[in-house]
Image 1 (tube, one colour):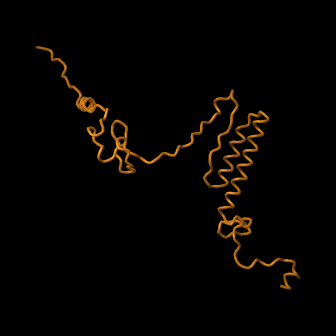
Image 2 (image 1 turned 45 degrees about the vertical axis):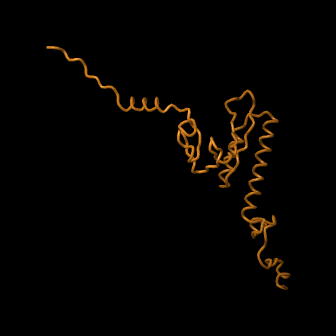
Length: 172
């Protein structure tokens, strides 16, 4: 202990250091006493804040430098190989070519039979009418299917067996 006072160096702490976010994992001095997951999340939040601030400045100033924002986003994605969420950028109303449409995937409920509303999951049967049915209602006569199987069969046979006619022969 006296040697550390003489040299001016601090001794390493005894035992491992827990993450400062209290997530239960161990942190290190290289990651600012955070675990690797918390450190990556903190870096991503900082990058998103920088991108949001720069895009806000571009909107306020009316600058057309959306390419700069895009290149910053590409650099951020290349620096951190973690899945990034898309943040839609706002474009000027007169520049319709640079507008991006971002659709949020709506969480679908469980798969159910269209007749009895029974949950079918992966064992459901898709009918040609476009609906999903359980094993009891999978046949067309059990669920009053509007699909016309007769005309579909005729069309399939007509495509598979084209009419072959020989050219007329010249009579001698």
